[in-house]
Image 1: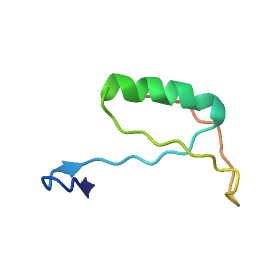
Image 2: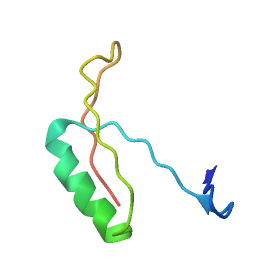
Image 3: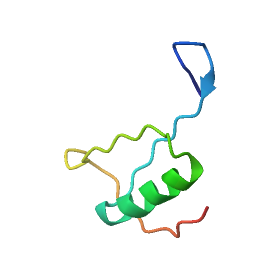
Image 4: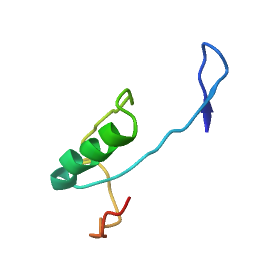
Amino acid sequence: MAKKASNSQDIEIIYAVVTRLETSRLNTEIEKIDPSAFVITNSIKDTKGGMIKKRPFSH
């Protein structure tokens, strides 16, 4: 949880790592849940270690 600066309202922050092919589907799901959601997308090409494993996407 985080606090919104203007009125100390609690807000949820979700951090997700998805493949390039999954970004469109994730954005569609976010739009269904909260059309006014603030979304930032970054490349992780500079990230080291680990491996992204394919998992079923369920809502």
